[in-house]
Image (cartoon, rainbow, N blue to C red; front, side):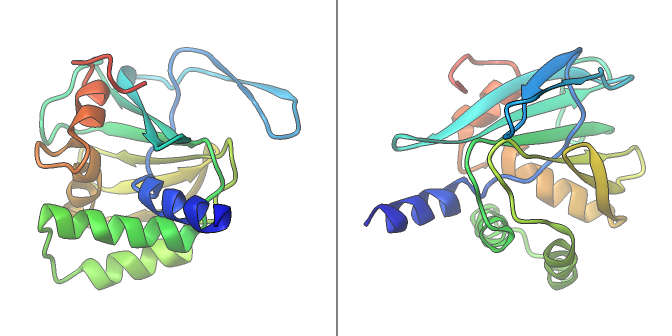
Length: 188
């Protein structure tokens, strides 16, 4: 029963996937118990952060970054980072991404390519891992896993469709969106 509940929670949380640059200076405890100090990302300031909790599971903490620490719909460059608070399979992340696109009514003929690219790119996630997406001024999307680049998608439509999972006014989690935009303290 617990395995089923954990699996459902992991699937729900799979809304995750995203950028990975950091706020000013952060310290993270790795799964081994060692402490890693991360340097600030040049040129980007945190807009807001939110934590997704499903029932009694903490799923992930997300952070949004922009050049000036504020966000307007469609703004570039941006970084969206997700720090996972539990293990999740890449397959579950991709499934949740597709669920969220259906919720947002995203219909793009390139979606099968996007999904295949994500399947080849995304690793299985362990608690404490960070997956981030950085969308540059031209709309190219770079993914990082624990600060290491793992792949990119150059289609500008992808960057918008992907970040809209969290940033669209029609997101399935409006309270997380408000916290990411720095407009509410409800994201934690």
